[in-house]
Length: 99
Picture 1 (cartoon, rainbow, N blue to C red):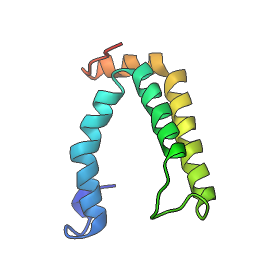
Picture 2 (cartoon, rainbow, N blue to C red):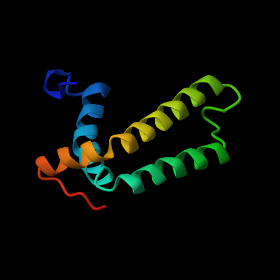
Picture 3 (spheres, rainbow, N blue to C red):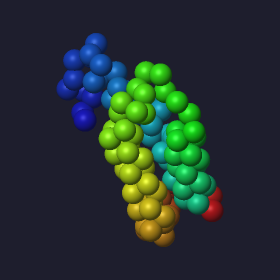
């Protein structure tokens, strides 16, 4: 998403700016330690399963919960499977690998 082409007062532009300003540094840090990232994703999934959400009750939104959990699980598996490639790309881009 090109945040420069979005209506600057609209939600998509605000989200794009937030993603760029906060998401990029978080991702750069998180992907620097892939085993810890995988553990964090597992902890997030476990926490989500053990806590209710009054705004989007699991019983009413079961399909959506399942889709999100499946997506995170798939992402975790892909990151672990491609860990060596991710580390090489990070090193080539001057990013730290902490593991």
